[in-house]
Length: 155
Image (cartoon, rainbow, N blue to C red; front, side):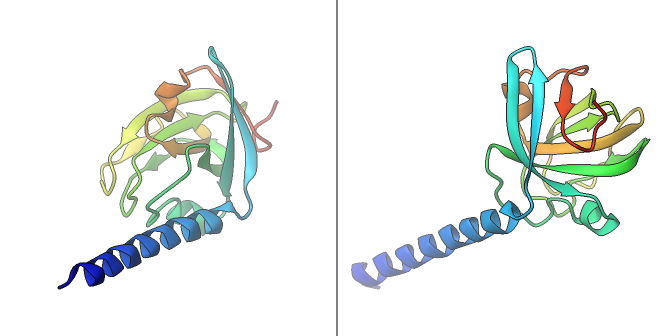
């Protein structure tokens, strides 16, 4: 194959990848809400999708290949209970942050392995679970006891 054709195919592959990233970001940008996490290092702002129906909670971030650094998904269980998650069909490595009804971080499962069917339990009852890109919890110095501020939690 000549160099011009190879360059054309390379450019086409790059375009397809970029279009996919833009489309996945645009699709997830709909319905974003503000969320703030207060840690010893300060307040950290995120925009999150809210998974509030059984179908939304079941799908979560499955099948996505990219999530911007300041984004996440917040699972609203509408009741405080023990929960378990897995990473089946989830390609993005994640930190799972388990949060009480009062917005207090109760547990952090850092670096959940993509595509794993291993269960990741909340430990104690939680009201919500925040999924962010792997490494974010450590980057912001998140610890159990820190505060998550978002409309689903009581102040």
